[in-house]
Image (cartoon, rainbow, N blue to C red; front, side, top):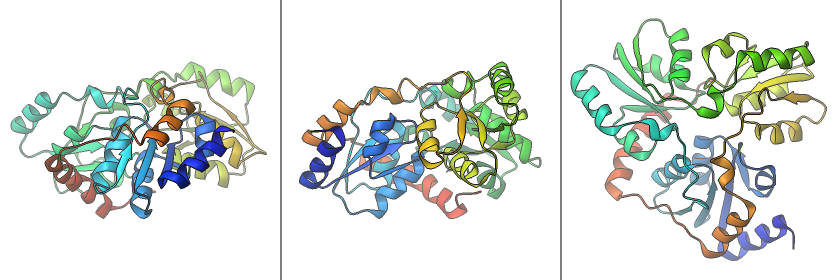
Length: 302
């Protein structure tokens, strides 16, 4: 029995919804009921009635699904699939910042663990980060944990003081200007589309900056036939699948090893055993939900 056939069988037997992030292995994306960005998947889980959800992504993504869906079993196939950037937030240091800066609003990227969300005034995604920051009454903002996304926000929001946490996504941060320039020599007519987690110097070279969902939309709507893409290399699976007549190059072949900890074998095991279930204390769920709900009131952004 093929992987996809086995997945379909287990979905029916165990009332499972299978969702996968855009950076998951292509074979897992193909087997999923839904593929998308992290928060989009968490909201998709909310819309569906399945009792059990197998969430293929890193830890904070599964946590967000639990916070929005405390009545469902959210199963994470590999607990060691963790986000290093989310782990860069020191909670004690964050609490001290809040004490020292009581007039500042704490804006946390959804790419953070539940403990960080609890300490935040509002969350944001890469697509609505600018809109979220602009919506706040406070003139002073602490944005965490991604300094590159924070720097991008500072370009577009000029009327606020924005302090940046010294965190970063190792996968996006290693994409260099040199990598982009090498790809441009091979594809001189290509459109450069990058994720805002990239370094500012890389963003300077881009024709378009956006989330994974934004990148997908741009690639589909653009008249360009060649693209240099600044994000995790597995994104190419979906881009090529949805745009078979277009070429996509990924400078530096940026790979998230933590995403790849989830394998087809682990997905099957999780679907068979309905374990491991992501467990979060009820009080943390309630407190973490508030900044997420506040974000949703603002909207997704462009």
